[in-house]
Amino acid sequence: MRDKLGIDCEGTRDEDLHGAISSLLTEEDAEFEQRIDELNEAIILASNKSFPIYRATRSTTLHKTVPLWSTDLTVLRKRTNAPRRLYQRTRNDEELRGKRKTQYYECRATYTASIKQAKIRSWKEYCTTTNDNNPWNAAYKLAMGKIYTNTQITTLKKPDGCYTADTKKP
Image (cartoon, rainbow, N blue to C red; front, side, top):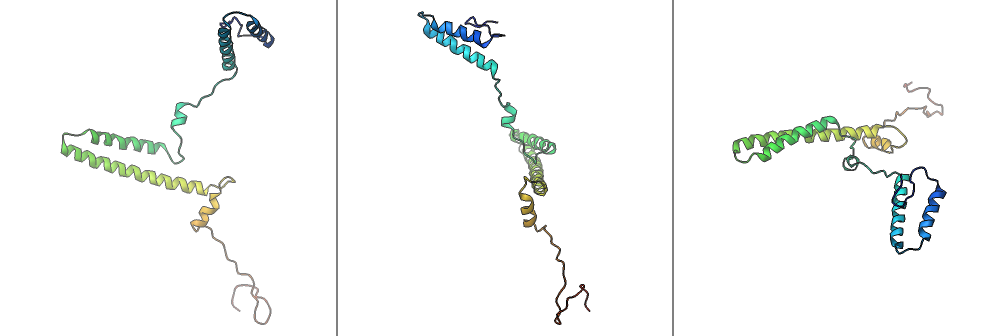
């Protein structure tokens, strides 16, 4: 395969490519600017073939994952949006609009309560995971009063100077 310059793009060696480019630049003609533009296109073509361009897909840039999100919440969101659309589109019949409004508000209350529960559950799960990268484990337990220390009574010194052997009263 040859490009506009007549340079073989597939299977050429670097020396051949260098020689072809040098011969194009050393020729004296009136189309020197055009030759430079063609050389620039050849460099861009070689760069595009040599270095693949990786772009983030649209779905990864628009939709970030949330640790608490689940398929149940997705279903609830869809079940909440459907009555909302019905409520918003009902304009002429006030009685039907009122019914749809109450139905939408009930669905929305369920949905927001589910999100709140999922947030709490996700936070507790995050705080209780034990690994080196989680500094919140000890802080969470301390703040919630979940750190229990067993106070163990050791021997006591009696007024006569000897020590007790156990916790029982003599």
